[in-house]
Amino acid sequence: PAEATPPPSDEPWIETTRCSSCNECQNINDKMFGYNDNKQAYFKDLSAGTFRQIVEAAEACQVAIIHPGKPKNPAEPGLEELLERAKPFI
Image (cartoon, rainbow, N blue to C red):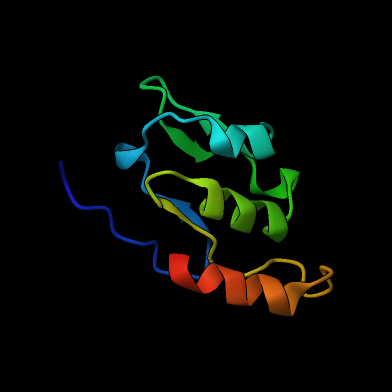
């Protein structure tokens, strides 16, 4: 399979083709994360959740394919800690 490359921005992204369909991200927020026809994760609606949920999903992902990007809401509580937690997934 082709190697996944990050988007040319600070947007969060998922290496969908490497998804193992573990449901961890959907357990965190099934409005934000969805599955495609191959039962592989993608961002269904980024506005349906928080940066915290993206970071938590990245931490829970068994194959480390969720990349949080940069937070959209600069006023989200605990942002400094979340940015630190997101570093391993950039």
